[in-house]
Image (cartoon, rainbow, N blue to C red; front, top):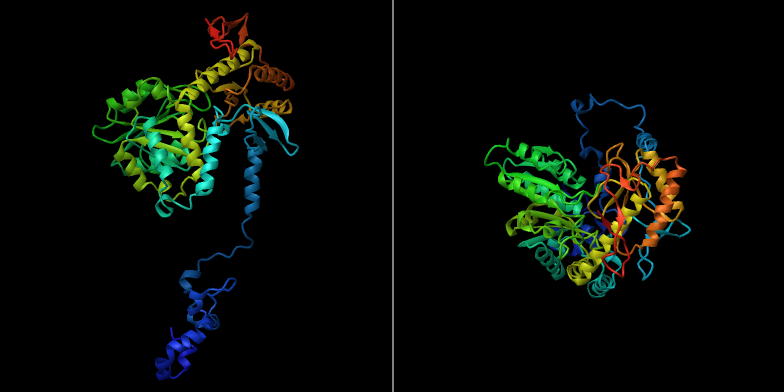
Length: 508
């Protein structure tokens, strides 16, 4: 397209004095001046193009004859309002409580709630061992901010791969006794990116997924578009039945969790891994609610049972027991490098910032040592005390062999009302309903930790009894004459295992 200004000049004059003209008048040209952009100017509005409407042809009749003129635009707000109203009617609308957890000595696990900063005790956080407020973890994070700033500056490919990132991945690999590890912005991303990538690139891959799997794994499997089979929750026999029908020589992934986040159940890990390997499948095991909490060094259920070698790919989180944020996988060097090289969820995501890297590294090392073992022992003791206190009070609780204590309250409206009643009495626990759990399986999910005290639990149980009465919920059918209604097992107090923590244990 000829320039309307330069084109009006003598061409010989332009050839001889073009460079002078460009330097003197170039900033007045909307095209040339793009290299000298001034804030606030819209350099795309060339007066020549704007005033010459015939340059851009009208759309041909064939492209416009089938366009239907709409009398009025679509009512987006009406649609969104209907969606939100439906969530509120069935009590599945999520209300985010204004809760600021306190980290000072003597304050954890308390928080400030609401606009008036009322003091409440937190029972549902997944900062299971209080690592987020541990001085060692805090000091590491603060020191890294002073040295390296608060942000990563971009993806690891563009902004650079920090030495702390590599140290953290080496520490995670060492923890799980794997050759390599890879960290992500969250464990949701770790599960989604890893499963979607592997199931997509492995030729003809078939996925076998536990019915109780977390949404992140379900999403990753769905995004891979690989064929899948669902086996009953924690059922190795059903898994074997499905795998026995699979064609030989086809890549297979078996995907499941160790500790289930909402029921507290722990899977039969060895049996499930053995079945998977018998049929040539890789095992992808989510240890999110187990890392930091089980095993001599806090590596999870695999370490506790001495079968880490049977897990091909382990995923974990830095955002629960380790008190920071982020997720990871660990496995063979080639597998991890394949995910690193091909997973969009890793490649195009900003790297974890320096304080998170330093805090996570400090937390893993802390919980792998003696102090970590002491915290885990206290944690399990206070969990037992809560379970026994609920039982003695006749309050319902779902069977759980882990640190998660679910109290079933059927009905989304009922569980929300009880949670509200507890909050009024100074205890914060979030109501769990659909889609986190199935309709009719609503519950309160308690996660006591080593910094909760027996006095706090006594207060909670009293508040829970009052809340059940207040909302007309029956709860006295779970203990009959001092024995469990289901199995007639008698429960009694035994000597505490540790004198400094007088938490009674269950004896049979």
